[in-house]
Image (cartoon, rainbow, N blue to C red; front, side):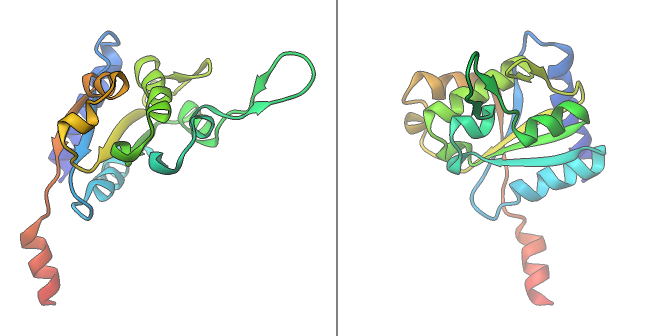
Length: 171
């Protein structure tokens, strides 16, 4: 709904105004519960482009950019999502966070905290939303990286809309 979209985006935008509080919304629900659909609707409602990073299949270089190896100092090729999110308001969906490897989460933590990637500032109206499936807390909090991520997000449970599902099945 538009009211929910406004509330979630207000939460994310509040983070932008208070940089000392690195807190981002995180949708937490089972497969098919609507996490990605909610992100699409939020992007549409707020006029932001949606960029989805499927973290379970990414390497740190996919998030941060690849080194451009030549002679002399190392230069970094900027990831396409960073170019988009630095040039215009973007909703960056960090999906499958529960399945990402610790070194990928570590790269994400830097972007969440600084709102930049390798010195490139993201657009002031670009926001992050994380998404994942429920896992036991002891599994997710098993290391310092998981603990650091949990300290930077506010977990928002997403459940199946059984009424909508039963209506759609009856058609």
